[in-house]
Image (cartoon, rainbow, N blue to C red; front, side, top):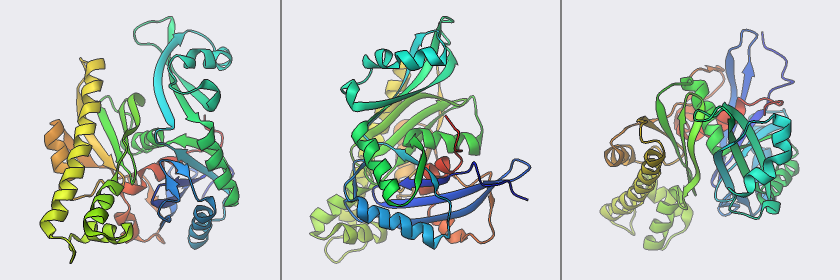
Length: 353
């Protein structure tokens, strides 16, 4: 027997290249059933650096994917990311949630690199500061209003209701906490997306360091380099990247391009980890969990382990869910690392903070 669906949301991860959708139903005993999951390709350039450039095309892809999956629920949870979003843990004087709501703009102004009037602010009180009992630890999120408006308009155009707007890095943490439990071990969550790399260092349900876009390139960095060398379209370059074969390039040249890009990713991730250690010198990271379309690129996991000296694993966002028997196991296997943010969105509920 299942609970009523009144409180549940559809997780909708609108990536720069791939749209993912997931529906999770809660059982009466508190278990979670993955009821629906699907993915579809977004036209090249329709989403760029987290901004919606072609809302009509993306809205059509959303409508078609939900129809294909026979999803009728209209309430959705979506996330944003990239350079227009900032996440920071700050410490403020002890006060109530209501008092902080009134003073958050003043508190945030010293941390926000944008004009404060151009951003939408949100926050969550994590608890008492570990270093000062008279101060609170608060996670602050700032997103440019222009980006938020674009996503809200897109969801409305698709005929849906955006109940929760999350942030990629925090959605990633949602599914990690659900799937692996809130652990004392410090873990680096890294999502290698199509156009950006997102990083979140977490411990026991708290984010210690977050980078919404530690690199301006993701998987498309490889596609662009191949397209330039082979004088072909991005779609053709993607096929070359996957197959490693082209009549326009030697296989060694394709491998060299992939190695160059993944080496750059590893350097950026290593820099973020080094910065973490400069702020938390007494802590020790245990491992890295990879997600996103770049997680399965051949040799990247091993290269990253070598560069960081850490164990590197690929996340399984489907663990701890009962899978509906109608789901295609081959699709779940194909999109396992790419589904992490989507699943982190799908476990959100309407009245979540």
